Image (cartoon, rainbow, N blue to C red; front, side):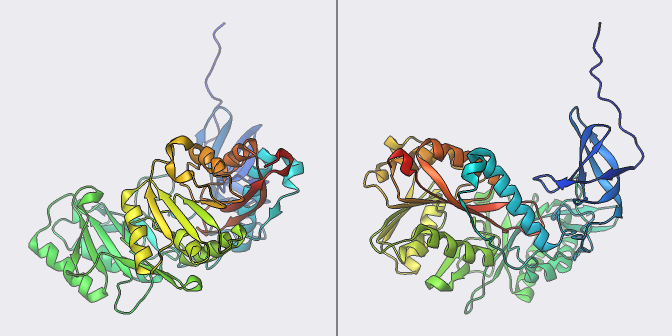
Amino acid sequence: MRRNNRKSSLPKQSQHLHVHKLSHEGRGIAHHDGKVVFVDGALPGEEVKAHFIVNKGSYAEAITDEVITPAAERVSPACPFFSTCGGCSLQHYASTAQLLFKETVLHERLQHVVGTTAAACYEKLPAIASSVYGYRRKARLAARFVAKKGKILLGFRERHSSFITDMDSCVILDPEVNLLLPALAALIGGLSAYQHIPQIEVAVGEAGAGKSTCALIFRHLQQLTEADIDALIAFSQHHLVDVYLQPQGHDSVHKLHPQNTEDRLYYYLPEFKLDFAFHPLDFTQVNADVNKLMIAKAIGLLELKATDRVLDLFCGLGNFTLPMATIAAHVIGVEGSVAMVERGEENARRNNISNAKFLCADLTLPPSQHVWLQPGFDKVLLDPPRSGAQEVLPAVVAARPQRIVYVSCNSATLARDTALLALQGYQLQAAGAMDMFPHTSHVEAMALFTPDPKLGN
């Protein structure tokens, strides 16, 4: 007999759904005819009407059309474009509830790998959080001329779509950039190449004497005319922003205006009396206030001493390396990018720090390939990308540190690596969430590991 593998059809009309919790991605979870339904825009405890957009074998996806019974934590979004823009997903959820949700996601994932008994033993650190609006200092804004609207659209993509949101403000962007959005759209619309500028990358630094605070990188797929260049320079002069052009790949990025000035922005860590220079394309944390709190907390967890040798893996431009060097005897920062190693060295010189060394190395290689491991280290800090630190953990363990602080931008890979560290003799001592991206479901975290005394380390 031929088996019917076709998925059962779902109703086309909106359905009443009861939402009982949030998924780790920030969507409401409901059930319809025995199938799990992930409901965009719904909160725990709510009764909603929603229409289905995806039907899979084991689950379905839906979008909220109407909230019949709102949750106590539901709030009015500050952004008038929240319902269509894909830049945020949780503005309808009170900030305190968002923070609790992120803490719950983190500890659920960690409990899954360490077990309920061990989970009860590690310290749950208070969440690190700051301002929930105007925090975003780096962004990639899509641009497109839409003939039906007769104008340039500039902003984030719509939810569940490749279309660009029709928006003229953004409450999560740094206020300096937010105020520029209408003028930027008008600028692009007035260029001869208006149909060939697909994006603007934005980077914002902190104010300093005579230093730029905002850089705009215009990607253009067609050569700009002299009139276009003049318009961009005039915009730079009027709004006091640095303007860069990108005709091809990242290597083609170059400053258009102001000329004869360094291609750097700056941020500061007053607690450590440090200032950092960075290129607008360099990786830096988008949330400056949370970054400051994060660095202070990580250094506190490491319990640095003046005699310590410290290893900083995935060090970037020295965001953690240099603050640690103000306390410890010696710090080695290791990074896979030559450009970022050079930026770390540049920032060490800027701050007259001589006890920090930066090395470029492939962190996926086994410990035997890393000559910098040979002296051993007292403390280790890891700040890996979303994929985590799986490949480099054998090198971390080979350093035999007394304490490991793991800064994570993905709680799922942190949980996986927590299990791997446990197999290699390190136990979870403390963990806490960080709200680096308010109003989104991104869960960033910090965790402390120490040698497991039961294993004789």
